[in-house]
Image 1 (cartoon, rainbow, N blue to C red):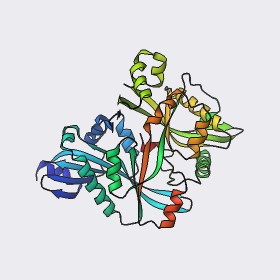
Image 2: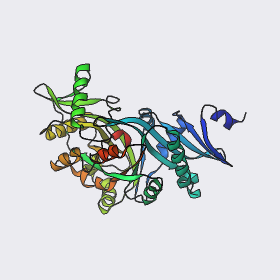
Image 3: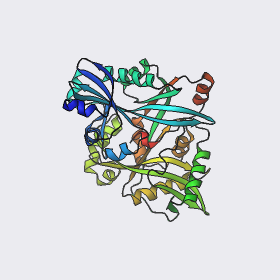
Image 4: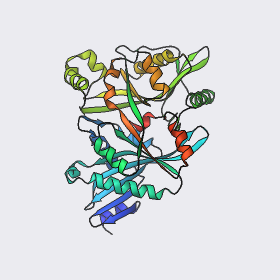
Length: 359
């Protein structure tokens, strides 16, 4: 048995033609982690690196890694996640492309488009039950948009990247971590009420990382889960961001908010706040910035979602939000075997988005 055959013994070969193989694996190996740490994400003017990838990968919902082997060497990788999502009383199987990239030395061969089409086609055929297939495409990435559209994916919503920042974040005595079973139960009830009119709802990630609440009169009136993330920004689009990237190294106060060489921020997940408690939520985030020694945070939301409109309307998100509009994405959906009336119900509601799917 060759060394390659030994490596494939715990994997599944999905497709083989000549010197190319598509191989499915669910193992998070050190080699895979290094690939995710080193890859340059984005296209054209918006490019960055994720760091601390192992922590992110280990928290994913049922990850499926599909590798393209070219002459028995890894040339490209596609990562899918699988979960159940709810829309009102409806529940659907959800299968999404989380990451897709080519290994640097193989980018010139232009394998990624052909590989991704074949991979997505195979993974769709393997899902026998009615399924919502989802892809998220950066708004400037026309090639990826055309690719997923050619496979039957249609635009579902525009996703806003929302930045929050504080030059001087402050602690607040009303903030506490949700640790007791009773408080966790209350948080889940609050989340279910807050997102009852959304589509694609799931709380699989909740309590995988520390969850915090803002207490008022003994009630948790706002809550959020935080993930500390670190990105390295290589290139950005938009005149405002390009200017920021150039001047930040020379202005210490701005560098606290956005350091392109070491952009540390909190990913905000499972956001909720009771009616009229938007500012309590902002105080909660300010406290968590101080607690986690950072000045920035981000979350992602459907542009038609109340959680985007209401917090944006406060006018108190901070200077980072002036620049994050360049990070918009499109949510693309292919509804396989889903009745038309259920698709219309999905389309009538804003979509729920988890920070886990963007970090």
